[in-house]
Length: 152
Image (cartoon, rainbow, N blue to C red; front, side):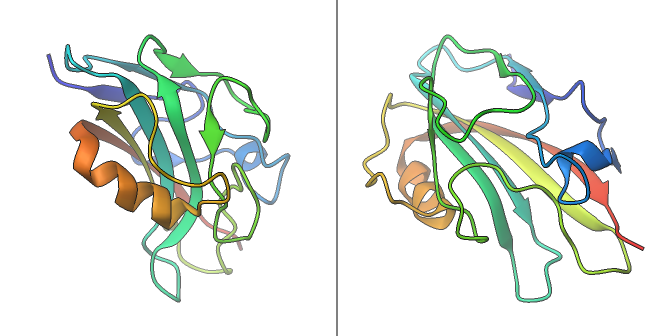
């Protein structure tokens, strides 16, 4: 099987609804996944904006997600006991949604990685970039879902 990532909140290359952005309630979208490798011990879910003017912007890194988990509902709390969340490039722990400058749509890459570890070796104060780097050595497979958002 191949790892697959989908969302009930938006489809592949579709517009991300405002409730999941800084223009709305800033809720994390809902996600479901399937097809994880048999030796998966945990997951990492990130949101990146490679179109940001200053380079790739990290919006979210949810990690140490248990292997038996097959998705996350919308609106994950910043202190959800089921997982850990890194400090994003806004300087906040947890999810901070799309908030691009006015103009062209940005592409938001939600990437799920199946990992061969239950817990990443990072401090509780870790940034998204630190979590992503630490996960590289444990990555088994990944899947991606891209959504679009523009402000006018």
